[in-house]
Image (cartoon, rainbow, N blue to C red; front, side, top):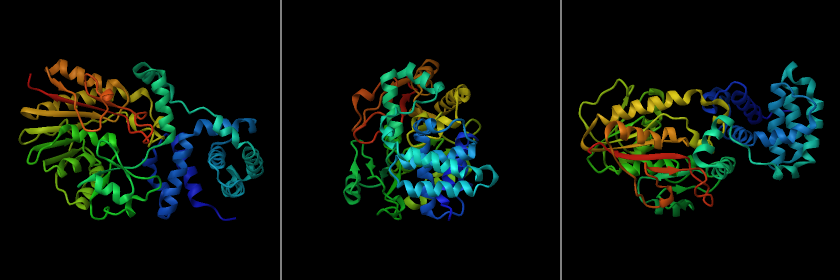
Length: 417
């Protein structure tokens, strides 16, 4: 029986996350040698299992007397997910048995068990719809409950389970592109693709008319409102969506990031889109500009808890241990960047985090240290309820009828008072 390479790769990816605490992005080697279609399918399967892991395990539990070895457990998890998502049982069971037999001594002897368990699950898939939405890990859920309350957290968990659509930022008129692609023009100006769209095959990709960027992330650069000819710094710029926005606005952009490897993608998108920026690989805590900037966009390193709906691996590989260090780094970057503004300049601070200590509290603390004037951005399409005293608070449960958005905080400050 032939081995399904996409399923085997999906198992390796899931195991890398749950057992080795490696993000999916850190496991590129698992996908080497696969065709583009196989890579996409392996990633889709892995993402779906990770989003639904608690539900998958609940389906398995009645049929297992004891916890199986890790290699067997991941194989069963993947097969259960496929069964519960409506894949033909015969094909799923046969593929799982084949993978089991191909695993050598670690799994070969369990082929009969796999066959029996999956056939029982296949008869019980109606229970899948009754299972609760998976909860966030305790270290994160507790913090979010304190910040936003139980109901809001439950809504965000539901948004995480649904996953994330693909949004585009457009160099020209977004309404024209939305009509051309049969996509939705969002109130904030982003274009949301229909489910299943193959990005690189869409009209305008090769010509550089647009780039992929979540609608929430796109609001940070819009809040900065860069003007033609302004000297603008995109600090912590990679992978570059905001740099492209600033350059498309006609600003004189410097894009700085500590990771030269991550800046490679920024270079590629600048070239594809016919835009230009000065790109610098350097540590912002050591680097200094040769002249002040009119405006700075600081998209600071953070816990990335606002992106769980598109990166469901994050709750498995992260914990609370690094939050304190991240908060300290964010404050240091804020302090340093404020010193690079010309008199009358402005700074937008953003993080893709759902934790107030990485968002609202950073602005409040910086205001106390520097006497800043805080201006809450008013942007087209932004619900007034998203505006708070320190800035915009965006959450995955906003726009539920449209497919949600990433969690973000965006604050705008002026060091002139």
